[in-house]
Length: 344
View 1: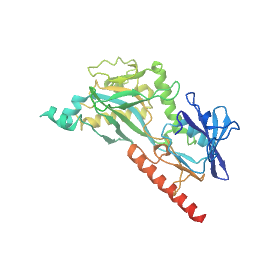
View 2: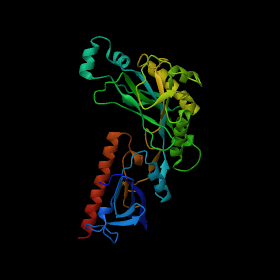
View 3: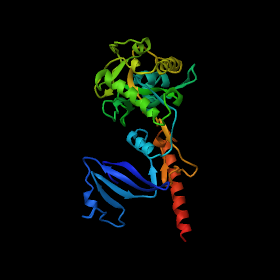
View 4: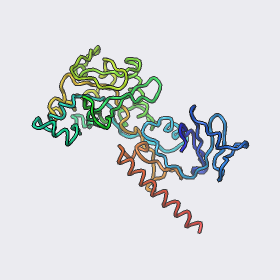
């Protein structure tokens, strides 16, 4: 395990993976692994020091499970000619309601404290097909949770949600997100979805110089450009936050579908579209905006590379990503077994 170290480049020869170029971060020091001649101090000599914090690792097999936000790796794969294709994903906002309201609506008021003690704070999962044919749905619902800043690039802002083990905060929060299709974005590059995400994150950052923007749902729905964010709902956010025009960040079709979805969800959970619930932005990292092409054997066209999990674009969420990784591992085991058999 090499901490604070990233995949910097690939050595590909004749359509096959031959090695990895890794680059250590500021907190890492892998010099102890190398002898004076720059080769690995252990056996076999699979590492070679290259300089400028980079070193070479011989490898004929790479399980590429990079997650959906490894943008520098996506760009490197594109430059190396690894086949990529854009795919649909979803973006939107994060909404906060009092957890007590969600509990009452889902459990009923009768013996509510006993139900909460046995079942825990109530959770929901909501979906709606909009009039324009797109899906709008809740995602990563966090009972008794917090809205958190999850930015990973300079001068960009995105948010997420989380709950501590006790699920003990005053609010329930969830992403309310809308499907975005490749044809919604300009250009032919497989990286265009990543560019779409970045544009939204730059706008979110620029609103308040990196402070998490929020407004009430009533302000969001009515297009108030100078919102005050006045509400009786406690704003349960980890990170600085301030009132701003969240709706103005979004393309019009996403804003319209979020509003349609919020009104539809009111029919399932009374109070869901209450005017003073809190809308924060921007939720842009729900899944990978592209897919790393692979065949039935789980390999890329570049032999030896096995894209897997959410970052590969074939899974969405923890469980499906884990299953996808297991499938890839079985294919790698099968390959190793066949190579050993062929060698006699």
